[in-house]
Image (cartoon, rainbow, N blue to C red; front, side):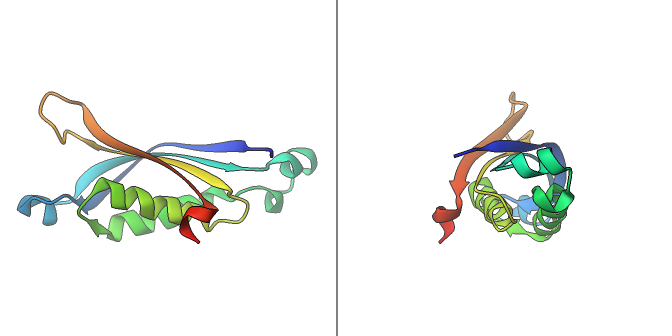
Length: 122
């Protein structure tokens, strides 16, 4: 099975995330890194946009969802993002890393990394 990759790197968004009272009111930065897996062979051969994964559309959907979401855990938000990615035409697997910069004192960020396939949400 061919698994080419499209990387979406350092997508910085703001959302309600966390369990503390102040986190339920104030939006916080979250940093997303996403890898979309699929077969990009046809697009590489014929240079047709309809033969590749439309990462612009996927990214717009992620932005819309994350900015409106109010999750308690980064894990749940990562699962949401994975589900959105896997609904895109041609995506067979996705890797998602979400970080909360400044979540811990003395640490640059805290992050969650997940990998999912289409079958994980069937």
